[in-house]
Image (cartoon, rainbow over all chains, first blue to last red; front, side, top):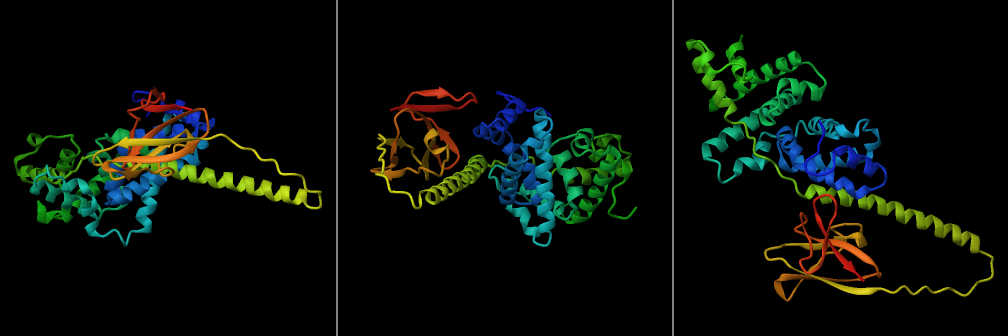
Length: 182
Length: 181
């Protein structure tokens, strides 16, 4: 994953920041904050929690930037920091992640979304919060972020069969949770 | 397989490896149920524009803390060194500063600030206040002579170059206004 969207590459910016041009870090934040806010929002069930997680992940990434062994792969490296942050948050607030949290993800409340669609979204997000973080993650990466099993396996450094097993369990649990909405 | 488990072929449908037409007739209803599940997937983007300045402001606060610490240590050392020495007349350095008034007309804005080379691009350092009409925001600050680059920050997220000043490309797709004193 080499980010290079209409400007200097991630690698060039990382090297500039490490050389002391601290302000350039804003370019990386600007470039990727929204891309991963959706992942964090679906993982944590709250847009506010997602914003905090993304912010914290960028600060941690800055602190550890010298450990980014391949600056051209900043994006994949950053994702793992954010992922760890989301999983830690999940463990910390497992008992507090209420089923109402799904309603805190604002996208379902958009006025251009029909009532039925909004209700389906809320129900699915609520059911997703009942999965384990590992099951939820593979579902989010595949069906929300649109990644293939191969891409997810590369990103998480795991195998496709183990991802499929995780996902298929997630399908069954979601079916159970969503019986009333089917 | 319990009553809640999808048939393996329906899971393949969910994975995108089969279509509904590939399923045998007896699995079509289950397949349709599975697809309704996916219809609830929300791919709407989530925007967190404030994260950029919050991250950069946090980094700036950290840097300032370090800067405060260094002079404090230096002053403490100087006090120790000067104890017992005859006092010398103080030297007064009078630095020339120029008072600058920043003005932005920003209809509908709730908050406006100016960030630039003079405040380490910290959007929270120099807020503008409403003046006269509700849409006009002003701030008056003293700056040293030289060239300063800056931009207005509207509602903590939108970076706007000064329409009344020349601007330069910052090399990263954004325009910085330039003030030469």
